[in-house]
Length: 207
Image 1 (cartoon, one colour):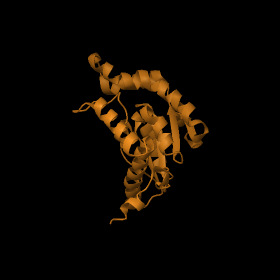
Image 2 (cartoon, one colour):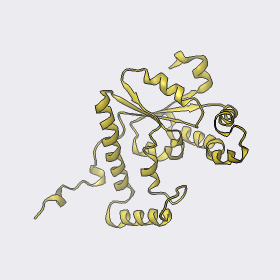
Image 3 (cartoon, helix red, strand yellow):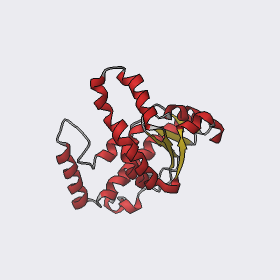
Image 4 (cartoon, helix red, strand yellow):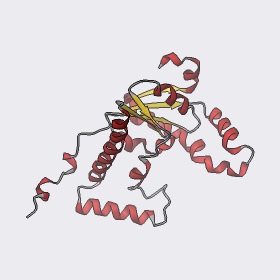
């Protein structure tokens, strides 16, 4: 008889990984996050890449709102939750799986680069800050703020360019994201380092 049942990990026995080698840069799009990323990438121990979007799909797997799929995402989220509640150890089992996934993927990147930290700059992470912090409480978090009017001006000049009918596509970035940044400040508290774009460009030595 297989002994796998006796060696199966429970959620409270999952790996000790809690994001010790991660830096999450949380910001609105067009807030200067690419500039800050390039500055930090100059540090010898930090590796980074273009926006990974890596954590969005796993976290949204438990959500019934804000996701569009070819299948019925509401049914899927309900089915996953019922499965976790009835046959596993609930949400924490799923989160243990996300941590294992993250440890494997980010760890592979760092092993390949030979660096100590991976900086994940994905502006839409404003949508999942609460889950990120629950998943990775030992990660480093950077909150980058910028004047919302300056962000709007940047969106108009880079994406919209006079095609006013597409402006509504950026409502999550322009209307919702400022409030999410304020929420992120409250969620992360002293665990996050906060920086304003305007200070970054006038006093880069602050870093």
